[in-house]
Length: 67
Image (cartoon, rainbow, N blue to C red; front, side):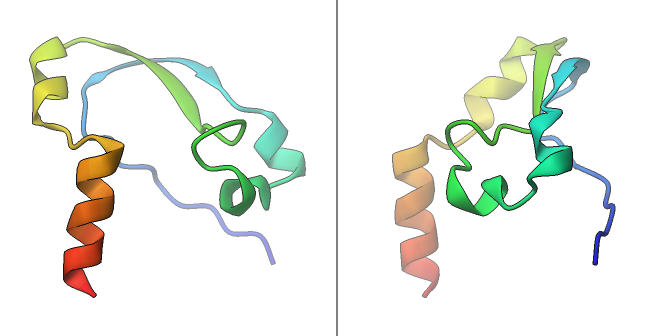
């Protein structure tokens, strides 16, 4: 079954590109989410928002503390 959901972004900006490969192979999101399975490329309109984001290492630490 296929489903469609909105994507909420932590940054404001313009979508420059959409990863069309995921339309044919959505399972890649689970296989390689930090590599070839990117969703969109965004040009930030408010670069200051980026400073509020966690690094990958910080996020791993954060979710580890939640378990």
